Length: 156
Image 1 (cartoon, rainbow, N blue to C red):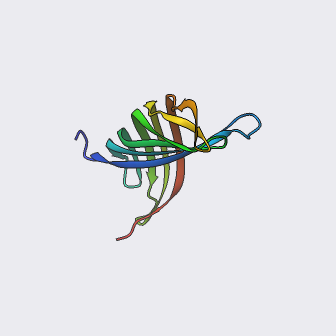
Image 2 (cartoon, helix red, strand yellow):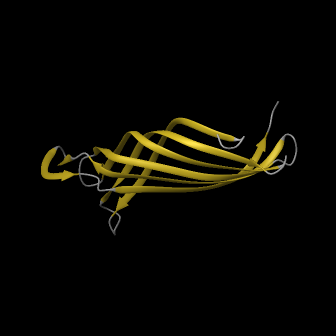
């Protein structure tokens, strides 16, 4: 690629998000569990300033293989919906300070965003009885921002 420390990669990414939805008094509503499996392609670039300091940057694009929403409802029967027309992307920056040949410190920031435009439909039931209503997931977007710091150890 364009610099010595460039990396192009492909892979899989799995993620599960939990969302609790309730009305004002917290009685009605649902707990939703979103389960997703993506294929991904990414580009990573590492810039070494000297032997102790380096910065790596990455950008990734995702395409969903599988995405669903499981709704654990408080007022009707539970339902599972398939999420459709989805896409996701991520980017991040990591600073590494290696203060000895075997130890270092890092600071890592990541930004992940996923969205879905459509879902399957399911008939709403109450204790197994049809209600005449249909459930679906309106367009939804997830964002996740991560900041991490820590120590690294290198082993030969």
